[in-house]
Image 1 (cartoon, rainbow, N blue to C red):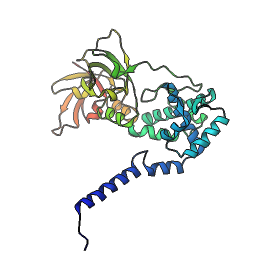
Image 2: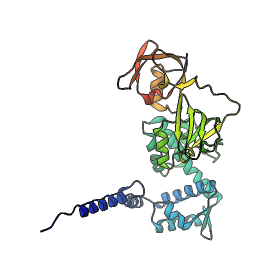
Image 3: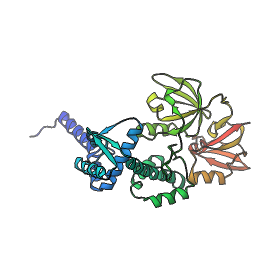
Image 4: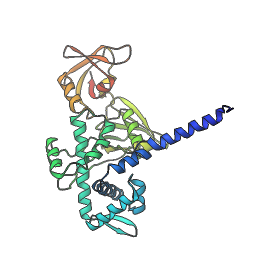
Length: 340
């Protein structure tokens, strides 16, 4: 007769949990690695290597052959074959296992980055995809669009200079606008500035920034900066981040500028009986959602007040141009106002 042992059952359960995690964890799981290699051609591997090398060199890092295997989820032999092809095409040079881009390789990498950032701009402005999907979808499209298609996409978008995260988009000739700014984590208290870039990697830090509802383009004032916390004011609200997450926010410091904390705030800060004037829409409001707000009358100069507060906190009905319009908090936070 077999007796039931709860400790053995618990151990088996934990082993199953670990195996499932190793198999299906995002990007690094065995299932995704095998699937990635199955659906990958040599062109994709070459382009991913070139892009990785470009970003590494920009950060002052030199990548070795052995490091490529750990940084990219491709089989070693596939990476090795791609390296040999890149050498023969004069895209890279290898010396003592260290890999460096040639001018041709750097130009090729910029073309891939151009497509990636243009596609993220397209997803932000023309579709309803969630922000967390932009990067992954652009990663796929960057290998599919040729130069002519990328140029047509750029023209359709109005030749943008920056993607929705604030990263500069290379032009057809490979030139990029300069991104001015320093990490939020390095700024002393009382510094005034504007968020000009939000880094979307690592994903865990990016998710926290999105959860905090922090917006690119917002003017900020640093209130606290120490080893455990960075606190700043923006658009009527206080935000607290760890220094590590704060590194993902790039701030363009504004010299000799006074930020009036009672003027430019989000609509979510409006209280009952208060009235305000709309100053504009945040850069976070894009595409169809932006057009809808404008069509509803949330335009610069319009007067606004609260018409009805929901007992469940949201949506809130706002009175604008004698019309009551209900907005959820995530919509109202994209409307900037000046209280009367």
